[in-house]
Amino acid sequence: MNSIFKIVQGRLAASALSACVLSAPAFALTDVLDTPAMKSDQAADHLLLDVATAGANFVAVGARGHIILSDDDGSSWQQVDVPVSVMLTAVHFPDSSNGWAVGHGGVVLHSNDGGASWVKQFDGNLANKSIIQQSQDVVSELEAQLDVAAEEDLEDLEYELEEAQFALEDAQLDAEVGASKPFLDVFFQNNRVGFAVGAYGFIFKTEDGGQTWVNYGDRMDNIDRFHLNAISKVGDTLIVAGEAGVMFRSEDDGDSWETVDSPYDGSFFGLIATGDKNVVLAFGLRGNLFRSEDAGQTWERLDTGTESTLMGAANDGSGKISIVGNSGSVLLSQDGGRTFSESVRENRLGNVSTVYAGGRRMLMVGESGLSVTTPAGENL
Image (cartoon, rainbow, N blue to C red):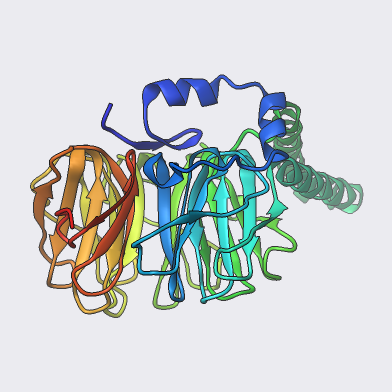
């Protein structure tokens, strides 16, 4: 099994693992949301799903709540204490101290010491309560408007109320299932303002460093509740991409979202700004890679020479970009993401995320845990 897909329950590394997670009852998930991750001497060699830079540190997250930390440029790694044992799918540090990790069960973890320690801030149970309360408020407001509405406004308000009641019922049903929806990506603009996105249209925003989270799902035209797999920022524009080619952009810090005319109808799994003004790449299934030079308004397809699904990317800040994916595929650009060449790692295992570690070194994570390679994916 050498393919990794970020599917309904998050980034999963094999169909057997997927079946296990998807069939787990809600009570089992509640247990792992309250159970600290077990320590393992082999945490760096097992499934890892994201890696990020935290100042001078590197932090990787993955299966069973594992978080590992390196303070020597990735030469050695130590597992740190984590208060949950759910699969963690993404991690982001907007500065050298503060970082957030997200994962299954709608969990959000926070570190204020460069990844050395973590606390749980949020989970899917709190998310369900928040959405129910928000839906109840909308229903109450519409009912109040109906009581004083002019006759010519009644039909529209009654329709809005019916839709709001359906949304409330859906939220209540979701709560009965439990904390079943994973977050799949996280992005913080600074140590106060951030977003977490995930399955079934999940998108939450915080403006107080994760102390409180607000559902922003109703601000997107995502009626089919397609999974939101990735979020990034280019210039002043936030971009979210996901399942079935859905893509949204916001120029007001997420308060409103414009639906983008997507360049294809397959799933996107990643986004990365190239460092050039308003230039961003989006990538996903079967080697599909697209480039935008206007902050995601329009896109052009790039020739990758591969049909391997592309999952994660790194930018060295000087025009070099690496994209990793299934079947050992590594794409390398040395011209700011205009053209790419492919190499295939000998083990042909899938990788999900990567970061540059200075010079000719790159850290990538995936099915076999953590690997240290060149930007083209050659072992070091």
